[in-house]
Length: 311
Figure 1 (cartoon, rainbow, N blue to C red):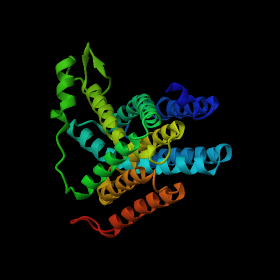
Figure 2: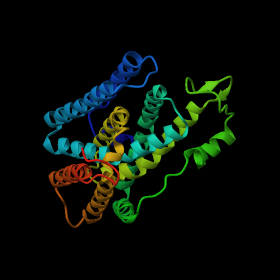
Figure 3: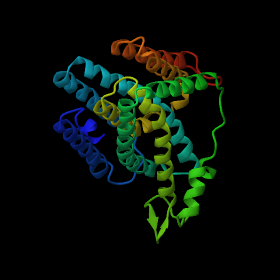
């Protein structure tokens, strides 16, 4: 499995990608956000632009080094992961509201959550690609799961969100770990007891695992190259933190994106199931995903939810 991971791209590509990621993360937290504060709209927009520019620059580098097909696969996977990560924004809003996390501490929690996601996503991508290589019939399992998930989301109505403070992860954490509910959000541990900061961080990591169960098989439906799956996932996740602060107050305005996410999941699942019999080009997949996202954003702005004023 490790051999397949390393041979999916030259060693210098793996090293260079991680050096770039850790360099920008170090600048983010160690220089620009060294003191805990709530990012302004301008800061969030700037960092969102930085991560999008880095992803597009990386895509251009892939095009020059590995060709147009690999570059198109990366871009499709990146857009797909961006679309699927929209639900993460709703979860972050619910989580931070329920635990009353001050805005100045939210950035640091999401930062450490991203570092944990790097390792977890790598392990899950490695396992997924190994399964598809060893058991070719697993493509129907992954495709069927995505198709079922997409159709379920399309047919489901609005569901009432649960309170994460009483969820399974929170209950198990409090039972197994000494916990100080008054420990605050400045540090994960205080006087030998876990603080609410650590509890929220654990829930963020657990949530990422749940979303990865959908997103990684979906990107594997676009490309089987572990390097492209991993880098597209990581670039999308890294940009999600800044996107959260940019769109947190406007996320309800894009309410029709959930329909688009469901449609994209169903499309990728159907594509995986029909792959052995009918091959769709990567250009068609990229155009379909882009059109669905643009259409849902436009529809959200043209037909706002009841009670909203169209801008």
